[in-house]
Length: 259
Image (cartoon, rainbow, N blue to C red):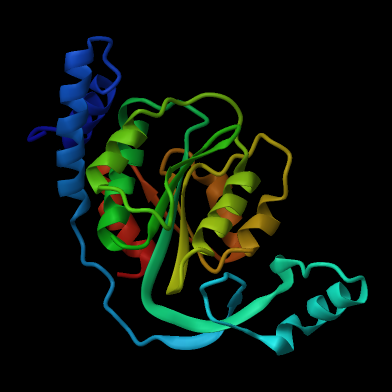
C-alpha cells in the first residue's frame, strides 16, 4: 500500500475471491475497512432548505396534485377502473441534500483494479450520501447491492461489491432505468446517478432515452477506454471524469458531483 496503493488494493480485491475460506473472509474484512477509510476523502454535501414540489405518486409522499393528475383520474372514472399510479402526482416536501445511485458495470473483467475501483466507489458514495444512496451492479441483468430506501453498513456494501465477478453482456439501458426507479424513492433536493462504466452497451435498448429520464447523470470511466463514455456524456449533458485506478475515485467523484 505504501509503494503502490492501486496495486495493493487490486491484490486485496483479488484475495476476496480466494479459494481458502478463512483467507477470503479475512481479506473481505480488511478490504471493507481500508476502502471505507479511503472513500472518506473529500467533504460531504452541505445541507440546504427543503421545498414543496410536484413529485411522482407515493402513498406517503404528500397530498394528491389534482391539476396534474386530473386526466388519469377522469379516464379511470369513465371506465369505472383504478387510476394508473404512474400518471398520478403528489405535492410533497423535497428535502435538502443529495441522493446518489451508483451503477457498477460488471460485464467485463471484474477482478484486480476494476473490482477494487468499484468497491472504492461504493465506499466513497456511502460517505457522500450516507442516508440516501443505492448501489447497483449490472451486466446482462441488474443486481441491487444496496437499495435507496434500505439501511446497510458501508463496509458490508463494500464487501458485497467485492463478491461480484464479471461476466456476460451489458444492459446499459436497463441499468439506467433501474437507477431512475431507485432515485424516485428519495425526496432529496438533488438526485444523481453515477455510472462507473466504459458505457459500451451490448444489449439492445435505448440508453440515451433511459439516461434522459434521470434528473442528473455523472459518468466515471476508465482512462484507457473512455470513448463511448465521452460520447454518451456529450449526448445527454452528463459530467465525465476518468480514472487510472482505484485511488483516483475520491477525486473523480468530487469533480463530477461538484464538491
